[in-house]
Length: 352
Image: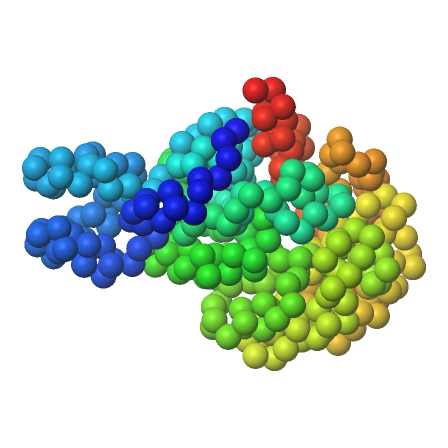
């Protein structure tokens, strides 16, 4: 896998068109000496026709297409595709600089959800996470985020209904590009913000800044522990961001936005799934406008954490319900196909 291009090279590349607002596309075509209505045509061909290069846009004059042929739309290439028996499809996408990211299409009877990455790798280094074990290379650009949604939608030949920023990376370390991508996904692809979930492990000050963005998305906070000591063991960044401070930001978020927070809690057998942990978690969240999403762990080769049994999951769930905590269980899709984020990218890279 090639390295990230140098800053000088990156600055010399034109900004891709994917992710730009309609008025920006119109301004661009006008700057090329074309009439303004070509901006609407360009938008339609990018988002409805799936154009991957300007040379494909046959409603444009041939001379214009030739003149701007080098201008990138900003689509990625499907490098690898694998499908699980339940219909879940995981994609490895090759970016313009040859880096590889993951995106996942998760179908059900009524919806198609895309699990989106926000970075190449992840700097958070959570102990149980395959992506974290692979290190961090760079943030994704707006077009590289939006492209994941279009890729899944085109592959499934079905409209995407929901987006979850739960793929590779920490979204709030790439907040500007992630928010711009959310706005494009909403505006250009037509997916409502209420159908978009952003998952974060928690970055000091960023949840309050997110509240100021006035988005209608769902905030999901990756808690994964019921006390500070355990969280520091699992999530290195917790050393600099105490659990109490994180929850204070979450309360401020609820107050400012009027939207509840979802807390994600990966259940690790024998480590954070005992009755005492359910009691601690319930005390932390008592009186909180929130919902707990329990996620049985997907084992990875790099560490020896284990997935709890279904009975252990049900017992933990009932312990929370008995303490009046809103809770549900998310059983991961595509377990046969390296469902944990980062697993497929690591395994395919090892085979090359």
